Image (cartoon, rainbow, N blue to C red; front, side, top):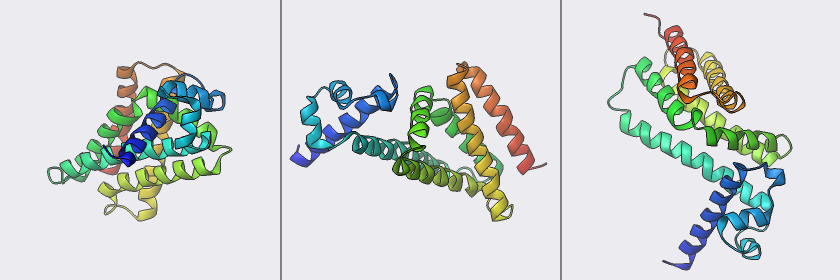
Length: 198
């Protein structure tokens, strides 16, 4: 393994360590020493890979957003040919997002921390805003030819906001996974029925 690969692996370990730290306490209360300890390295060594805590945070946001976006794109590319019906396609999108993102309580906890950080950190806010715009655009694909572009964006903006709100509610109200999933499915079925009346 080359030196560059070792450096990339170490950076990834540090990024993942921040994720574990954010599941235990807020970012503002997490120190460089906490992250280093979680990564299993000396905090002085951590500075070789990241100069400051915000650099780790920004790399973590990129890593997390890319991980889930790329997972979705890979899944979508495998299912595109077999699902041409727009209603079924959008329903499959909803199901994927439910299973991989909205019902992932640990991801929801971390995103709640990121939302808080984004209130005062324009770099984090910009990254989060970008990923939400990308999600909205991806979800628009199955219905973009059925409705005016502005209406499609408004609908999907609302759907993504609802999903994010439900993800936060699942953490706040400690919803059981099956209960949470049923609520999501009912809402999404209503959206599908409204968009694709029989």
